[in-house]
Each structure stands twice: as C-alpha cells, then as structure tokens.
Length: 128
Figure 1 (cartoon, one colour):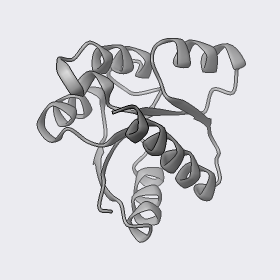
Figure 2: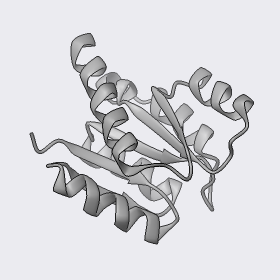
Figure 3: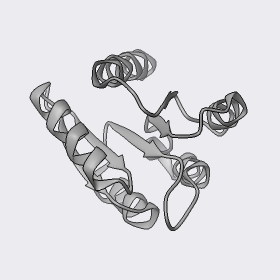
C-alpha cells in the first residue's frame, strides 16, 4: 500500500500519536505544524490524502482547504479529511461545502480515523 498521507496539525502530541497509529497500518505519514508548511508540502509531495486541522496558528483550516481546491490539475482533487475540536454541526457543514471529503470531530477514536481514511481513499480511487 504505502500511500502517503499529509497531516496538517499544530498539536504535535496528537500528530505523533496519529502518525504512529497510521504507520502501523501501512501508511507513510508526514506532518506539517502549520498551514503554510502544509500547503508547501501539498505542492512538493502530492499526498494521497490530507488530514487537516481546522484551527491552525497561521491560517484557518477552511482557507487551507479552499487553497488546495484552487490548485492546478490533480492536486485540486487531493482528498481532504478535516479534524476539529469544534463540534458545531455548522462547522461540519461549512467544511464539507468548502470541499472537504470527510470530517471527524476531536476527540476521535483512532480506528474511526483509519476507517474514514480508507473510505475516502476508496471513493477517490473509484472516481479517478
């Protein structure tokens, strides 16, 4: 498998836990601690999926998602799974309307994250 996932998340402890868990499941995960680094990584590595935190120190996750969707070619179709501590249904609706492929509120069960990643990648693969 060895699909490449990019996690844009400012909580290093959470990112380390997710990276370790997903690594055990066969994914190669890189981490960006802020939006600018994350966007540069999308350009540089063309990940198979982006795990995106909504509340980043330098830019709102919704804006990051909007910028990914505005990229040229296949990069604009990079699947985005949003993570957020905001449990408000309106935040989820806005995230999906901005182009996110899925949305998972924090705290989350790592197995659910893995299942959602697999589902998004499966749907994305069928659409290619």
